[in-house]
Image: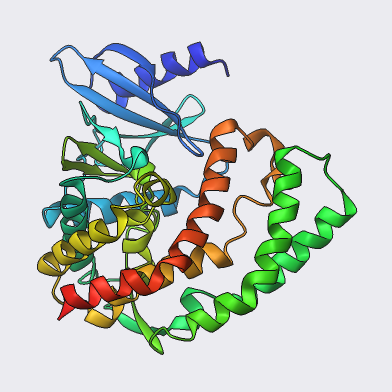
Length: 346
């Protein structure tokens, strides 16, 4: 189906199943797996339309939308879901399945990094989110072994398998694939040191229902405020410290602001704690160590040139290199970051 015909199908679905009379429909920001559209209606309202590819687990997507709605009901800035005329959150017609939410105007993703008052705003927003989701009916927070949050043994197996694949298909020198092969070897060699550093984590960390994909593209900012949290995943228990660190210690933030990320982290953690005093101080102190350990154990995007060559764009290359460099920075300044957090958490 062509892009033009997709737009026509989307317009028809909006009119027929959502009672939205579109004045205009255009392609919106690219999604990781979805095709997105922005629709304007005759009442000057704008809607964000997400079209799912064939083969998508639609029941999982319904659960993800419901999780966002529960966070919105607790006061987290999540765009409202528009239901169909029959009360469904996802509609299918003409070969497309779509969901419709409010369009968040005049906002940008957090991919540009955090600075200024954004540290406090993001810390508070994630704290409110975790406090709300801790009461989700899927289950309350529970302790999980720290070794499961940053699984060094599993990372070693995956990196060895990947290294064997690279050995079987040697990449050309100078290409991103060559960097991936070399970095796979470096990351595998560094795992024993990472394991030793991760031994200093508490024996258990708190796992709870979380957003699930709280990366910087899924956090929208307007000035120094959080405009929206978007693209939830289905409910699942993961480390709260891991999710907080993933967004406030995004590699691009760490590298772009070498003098700001440690005091910024402290501000974010302080704001998080004020919004969610129920998470233990031990978990909050673990945020930078978990963030560094998670990057050290990650194979992304080192396998992408083998698994999905079409996904290797200049943006992905830059992000992959930033992840690797940021992990080194986090390890180098870990003691300093933890000392600052101890002062905040006293």
